[in-house]
Image 1 (cartoon, rainbow, N blue to C red):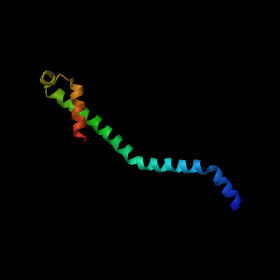
Image 2: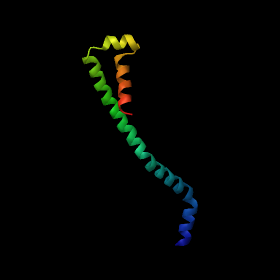
Image 3: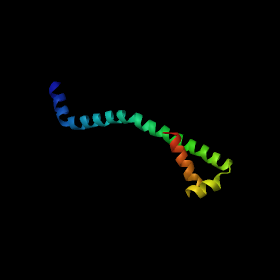
Image 4: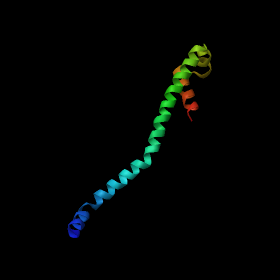
Length: 84
């Protein structure tokens, strides 16, 4: 029994060790991936809110003249600022 297991381990140890490291690395990265997902949702919702705010307050012309950016670009910038 021990001899069969040793032969099997000898032939497969690199694959199992590499697979184990990949699984552990995946567990390590899971919180980072979740945080990025939540931040993307926050930016999307905040950008929509800023876009609505910019359009409702009739400051479109003033923003366009001062910055040269579109309202959509300014809403994205505002969304990123709100979610940091």
